[in-house]
Image 1 (cartoon, rainbow, N blue to C red):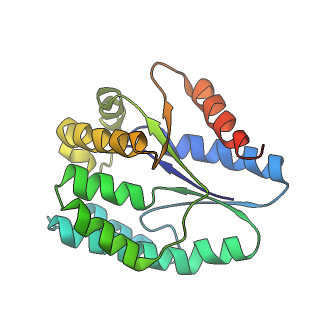
Image 2: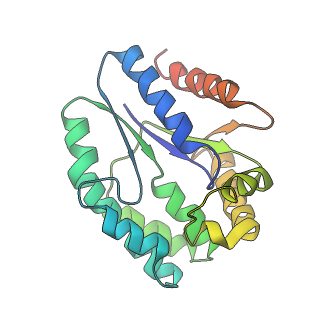
Length: 200
């Protein structure tokens, strides 16, 4: 099974992805590869740092950098893991690129979709969106010592990105988890309930 976890910065993707990986291994009896974007592959750190801390790229240049990163990620991690029969959980995927570069930075959505489609990346079995209030997410981000340039754009960007994610969810492109005032355990319970439904 290939599952992606989406959401704005500070929504809890890493925490919930780690918990889901352990749960999925126990549920399926198969190894679960936990990975992330950008840079979640051998030698990916330098490109990750360039994308997240580099200069002020145009939205199109940003998208192309993320697609280049994803192509390496697919070749070096995703396809080998799926081909070996492993589960894969990935923090961020195509929808993240749409949400940030089109929703947040206003790249034409049709152009973004065309470029993503041309890459023919694997389609996840399930795409989960952790829907967290942007104000709460930003309050978490501000506690971090080292923030990337997207996080430093603050509440304005996170509101636009969150609303775009919600549009994708309303269109049926993402499975939303309304985190609302739920604590970490309650969010995890909602995620596993949604994933377990796929086994029925």
